[in-house]
Image 1: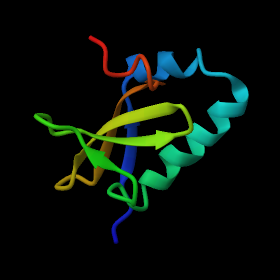
Image 2: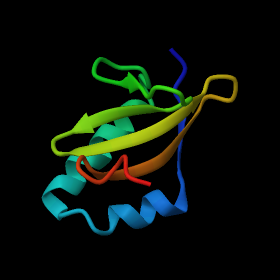
Image 3: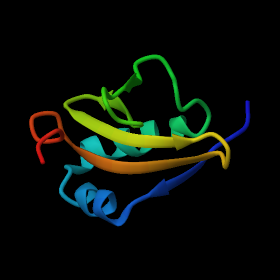
Amino acid sequence: MAKYKISIKSTAAKELEDIPKKELRKIIKRIQSLAENPRAHGAQKLSGQEQYRVRQGDYRIVYSIEDKDSIIDIVKIGHRREIYRS
């Protein structure tokens, strides 16, 4: 399987700053694993959108996949109680 390039939007990068260090390491490791398999076990497609989400503890990583260019765009990262709010 082709390795995907990971792109993190500036808003998602800013959200990473607020995450505790202990959880941050796990989240970064999970994001890196998406490069190998973006549709891994546990990834779910969000209804009505062309985005997916994956869980890491109490946090969620929302991303889109561009298969044609082999790019994963990390759109949003946050706590599960806040991630889906507008």
